[in-house]
Image (tube, rainbow, N blue to C red; front, side, top):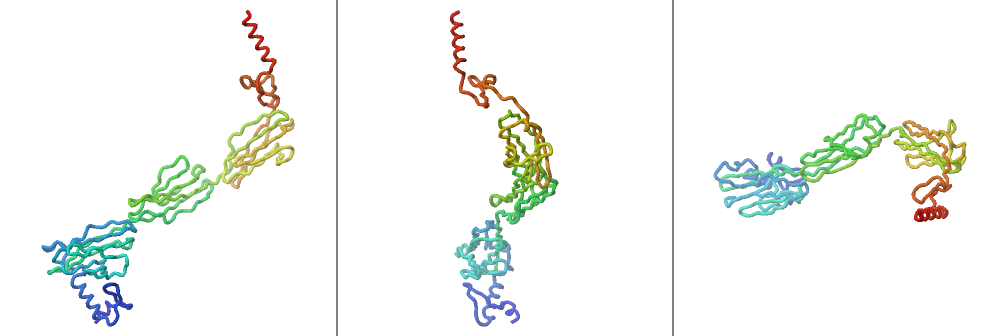
Length: 372
């Protein structure tokens, strides 16, 4: 009776066709105990210890997550009872289903084969499965192992980050899968940098050249890689490359340009000597386009010539450079030739061709050559 109490769960047992039992425990659970003791518990002689070679379960089954797994067991005419077990749980006994899992179905129940199928295999289905039979002489078992393969999947990755130049940065990329996936990092900004094989990618003293997108790839032999990206923004103070001095004639248009590389994008200020120039005053215009500032003189005067200072500013620092606006002579139509048949007029624009008088001189000169 103690054995019966141990076998009876508080919520009731279950039997063939997955129906709940009702009533007293002993009649049903003693039958189950007798069934297990008779031939289901893998305590019988392993295959090969006697003259019979049955049952014969298939080799280990490797299946991808979500696919179906079929477990086949070869038997012979000497088998009187058959069953499939998962560890110590009965899945099927003959044609009767003991498992409550709707994914487990019987496929073949003949004199030569006893097979079941697990639909939509998941990782918790991995493990040993036992085909157990009762022959005229002894209970026998054969075991097969289900191996579940899982495609790689990145489950945790660093968010995009903004840091100051010189800081240390650690990027994280965690992935799951079976077999365990390999995780690699690479820098996508041109030129693409070599792979770094690790879940954690450390950058010590990051520079502005190391900014950009970093790609994490997780891959195993099951399927193609799972790929994610992390953007790393590196903040640095403005840097102004060499600027070009500009010449302009009095009364003409002159434009001074100043370009700075910086993150965040810089703001610009223009000075002449110690005086800051303001947009719209004294006939000038100050315009910013991206990381470039332009100081435009629409009507250059003598007072406009001289050195100008461009200052680029962001939260990390400042940088400045000098630009010279110098005077040039106004071009004339009779002295500056741009190409065959083209000269510059007083407004630096090319005229359509030679004047009529010039053509007349050419014709007379040719006529004089042929005459002599």
